[in-house]
Image (cartoon, rainbow, N blue to C red; front, side, top):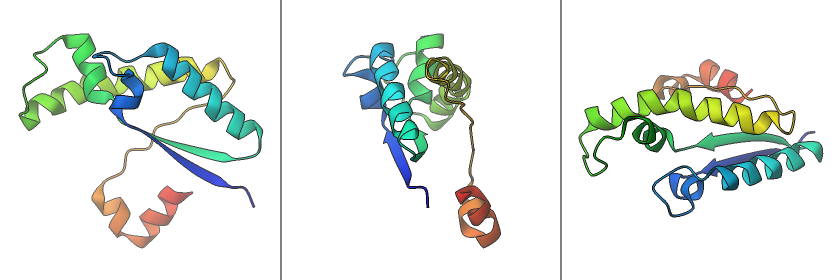
Length: 117
């Protein structure tokens, strides 16, 4: 049976303490995940960073905390973040995909099992 590893990357890991996505660090993370896959592991990457990626693109004031503001940043940033992951993992010939889950997906047994793969 293949071992499944879930890797959760918080925004602070992706930024290396800066106000921007730290691409060299992200390349290294992609390399490490590719090594795990080459060793026979199934890796699921759970990533934060969409709000920051949106902020990088739009340059809105960072200190605003309204939910609508964060949602707008995340909406812009999610696509940018996935594009970046696609580029980084392509270096190591690792395909990427995105799965968006709702609370209902986690509550309903059939949908939950489908999400688990």
